[in-house]
Amino acid sequence: MASSSRALNAILPQIASAPYEAHQKARTFASRYVKSGQYDTAIDVLFQSARELLKTGQAGSGVDLAGFLLDVYDTKGETVSEESRGRLTQLIALTGPHGTWRKTLVDKALEWSVKHGDCPAGDQDLHHYIGELLYKEGAFDTAEPHFLASGKRDSARLLAEMFLAWSVEEGATAGAFALRGIIPYLQNGNILAARTFISVFALGVPKNPDTSNVPVGSDEVILTKDQAVNFAQIAVLTCQRSQGEKNKVLRESWIRLCGTYQSRGGVLALPEVRASLNEIGNLYFAIPIPRSQQANPMGDLMSSLFGGAPQQRQPTRKLIAPGGVPAVLD
View 1: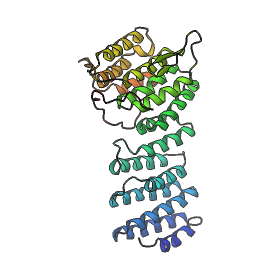
View 2: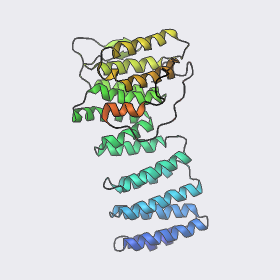
View 3: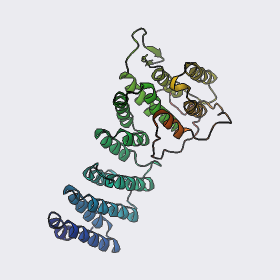
């Protein structure tokens, strides 16, 4: 790789006093390096220039260079790695929450990670970083789709903590948030994330003082005052042990579980929730979906629970093969 020192020595000293000129020089130098195939040098110039511009509050110029950086990533065929992701997370953090600059950078970074990474919804670690950043800033609604798209255990844990805080802030029932967490994870076949989420979430919901916790195999259901939270715990454990149409006992258990709790009314009886649970029943237990049901009730489900659906694209769901869900996921 050719040294980027010459370019950076001409750019960085100008940032404090003449940021526009520094920005233009960075673009000029980077364009020359790209034309001569010196992609790594162009990347270094753009990254360091964007970083210093963002540090001085020049969000527009910094994000413009960050976007150029991603264009060079794409041209070079740069794959997602700790180094390539790390440059982006630094720039995203420095962009700040004000205006639309961060969203512009985040959207383009995720598009690159879809194309050059292994996950169809975008790099899991990048999603997790963005979700955690937004969560810490109190932007719960925009953090949520990133935690869901990440699907990592740490993302599920933070989503549960965030939903507990959100339910208190909004004065909403815990059960609605419990379903909002487990249903997308289960629909994407991510048992581990669903289990992590509901385990953390249930611990933060007031217990029912008149009952004891219920053992389910080697697991335990924490009986809370919220029926939907209790349902969510049992639903995840039931799906975890699914074996498609092979295990008729578990299929009947799922049908009885849904029927029992839905007969009590509340959020579980909402048509949109019923439709999502029908999808899960088909996914894990090969139970046919009613012909009258729409193909994808997820958007209506989120609207019915909270007035808005996650905007981040989720991975395409697939039918889980018999025996595809391990009995133990610790």
